[in-house]
Image (tube, rainbow, N blue to C red; front, side, top):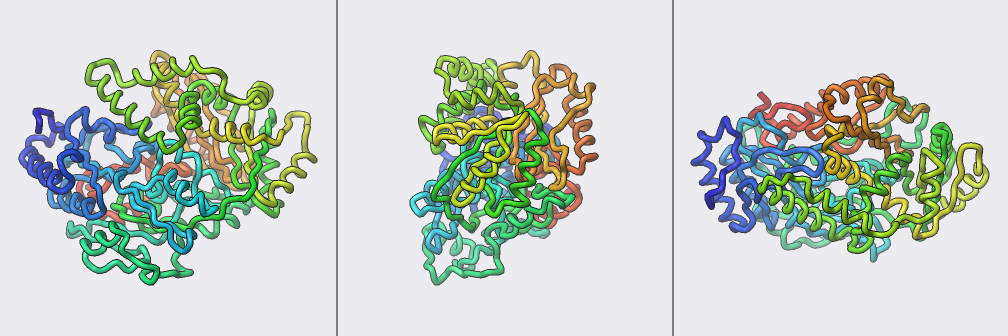
Length: 579
């Protein structure tokens, strides 16, 4: 294999060397040698997670069609290797890469980004997305029709896939739409007898055998008469607007372990191999306005949240929270991503991340470390002029808590009248954004996720690591803003709070001081969250950072009884048959 070391876990390498050569040759016969990657450098961008996750793999494979994907999966099942399905590899909890050691079989990553077609059906009211289709691609396909996908700019900034959102029940920022969800999908699973089977619940007649079904879908060979329309098979969470408005409920609006939205592919976390999902799309607002609120009193924002959900006739499109410290960090350490998206659009962000990952692999192999790219990009970002509008910076200086409310249609006037009646107040104020200010505010918010990673990369002497918690607070919670005990606060260098505020979903990240025990700190913070009735993770899936709760573990075992797919997810067993 070109003289490169095959990446097998050390304790199983001897027993699998002959099989590895045979399997890799078979994979190459399916996709071509160009799309089978072997070796430390060649697999770096696949096995290294966006934030977390890394481990040894036998190979990373990029099938170019659904039929190729099936043949790759069949080869892996025949060889009895573990399989990790991966699309954009943008996960925040390491859920689409290996995680350390302890696996009893070699791992093959199957990356689906080459299979990225989107078909719009029913005059654009629904979409069929193949496994590598990105949110950005779907958003652009729908825009001329005046419609939108479940999620818009957010995860789409870094090229997240539609399928990844469904598999993770991702919530997104749009308060009216809830977690990504569908009951209509096409997927493969491994039976208890270790047989790979194809399940067509897509609601489209495509034939019988896997080859016929997948080849027809590959070529788009189906007609409107083949598509079944059913009121009982949902392609989105139709109940969420009513659900999120229940501000007296003692449970969160949405969280990853909520069984109400676990259904086959939905919430599967890579325990199935997805070939296609069918989703509802939504009318885009014909007119939008962003209102920007700043306050030094967190209770003021909670009252606004309860008023909007409990009294407004029309819900806002999105309500995004950002703490002053998170604003600062995004302003400084997310600047290059902000400017890149402004100049080149979200379409090119995945290409930029791929190039960065390749560069990191080269510098790592040369023993220059894998964070040199971050230091170079951070230095370059300082050369550019100020990128945020003056009024946003002014509010950053004056207020601790920031809430961005995106409104559309009839909600605009409702919101304008409500805020004018409440502000200015003793502790806060608001302004109605220009188009430029509104765009910049939301883009700064969504560039913030990468800013935390950048800070860690350029401050290795003072930061041990990131403890990232994705928290869903009860809908009736009033004291939403976290106050940590001094003994915990003293072990943290920087805190980072952002979130989807109307849904009570907060992303709380802690840059832990050098030398501190990150796992111990996480356990202590989680104990505080448990006492508050919070659920976590809220929308990023358990990945390899969180323990899957019993109901979620049972769901995974039902989908994947032999533990072939994504073993170890949710800190579950990495062994065959869940041993």
